[in-house]
Amino acid sequence: MKKTFLIGNKPIGDGSVTIQSMTNTDTKDVEKTLLQIDKLYEAGADLVRVSIPDIESARAVKELVARSPVPLIGDIHFSADPAVIAIENGIKKIRINPSNLSDEGLKRVVEKCIEYDVPIRVGVNKGSVKRKVTPKELVDLTLKAAKKIEDLGWDKLVLAVKTSAVKETMESYRLLAQRTEYPLHVGLTEAGTADFGSVKSSVAIGALLLDGIGDTIRVSLSGDPVREVYAAKAILRAVGIDKNFVEVISCPGCARTEIAVEELAKIVENITKDYKKPLKIAVMGCVVNGIGEGKDADFGVAGGKDRSVLFKKGEVYKTVDNVDIERELRTLCEEYHG
Image (tube, rainbow, N blue to C red):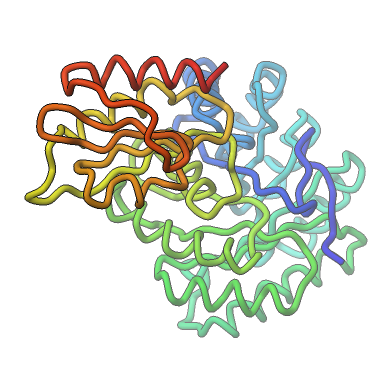
């Protein structure tokens, strides 16, 4: 039975999957950090992590927590003092690598987590291990670190075994999932820039989620962290965990294509981007396969030379001039949005 508890007001381990990201601002700059937290929240983040490398950053946590729209997680480095102050100032979860803290420091942090009911993420990334390790060895190290915290009397733990390689990360998490009932934080570490990093993360995180592995996810990308949240949302939608959105399916185009498929598909995506309901809309370039391939859609269009076919659930209901397709699609979007 998977262990379940709250991070602030967000449950973890209950079968849901939360999205988190991390600020890249100086945590001591409260206004700048809050601005980024707000942007991450607006993009869809459920949890946001802030770096707490020093005492001043830990002191800034008090105001950050008071004004943040989401629960905040503290990323702790090598000293117990910032962790203790951040917990006292209201941080809702901390991330540590127990090997980076002294035994006495770890004891102080765990005692404070028990006092304030703050969960701990045990993050043993491959890059933080000083020697070359296999996925099994990485899992062994993570469980050993978790055991140190358990022996100190605390078991509200989230575990992570990140690497920057897709196959290695997947192997590590699959092994870890077999050996623990703790919730898992899933993602690649140092995935890269937005383009290739998103692809790598989608492959690894998506495959693990389809295996039923993962309780909270982060897509770690260089640059603007808001892109991490958009990528994570897309992963949850692609694997079918998030169903409350509009999926626009469209054909790649070929010599039979009679309408501007990409342009129309993007228009529909823009119209429906804020819809919070499950809808599928098809934009197909021709009538040869368009209606059949779009039969699972709630509605759609299949292009013709001068006139195109509009259909609902695979059944033709209207033929319109091509110049009227955009207007007709807008009308259908509004009708289905209710």
